[in-house]
Length: 173
Image 1 (cartoon, rainbow, N blue to C red):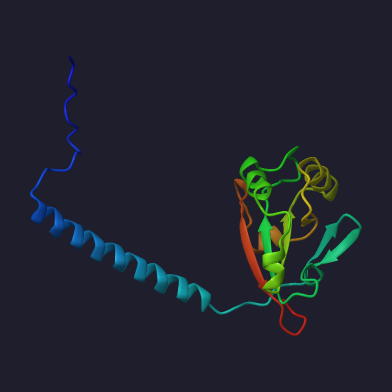
Image 2: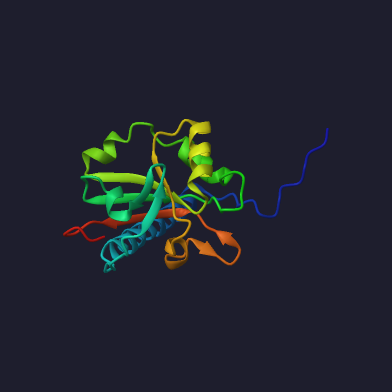
């Protein structure tokens, strides 16, 4: 019967006291890592804001301003979907992400948050992709605007995915 050799990366076997000491040290390190992550997250939440242009996107029925995407909400969550103008389909990972959003975004609405998707592809491509996946979410095209370039959603190698969070104050994003 063949018995494989133990890999060099396998941890040593020690007595219970040594294990308990090592575990306690690991738990201390993990708690510090959690606290550090909490501090970093708090710092991000306290970053100053910058005014954003009221971009005129293209929706299925014509121009849609950024401020209109808020509806009657004070905050807007935007999913920046990778869908370049020359592509025939949206990014598979972005598509998977939207496929797994709840069709009913009621929880966001309860918190005063609107949701929309923005991509660079022409609105006709966005509408066709949206229909083929049965998505109910608002999706507008930033083609013809500098939105993607202004906010880093397009890099030299192409579009990048991510989320933007906008706050509406006195009608200004």
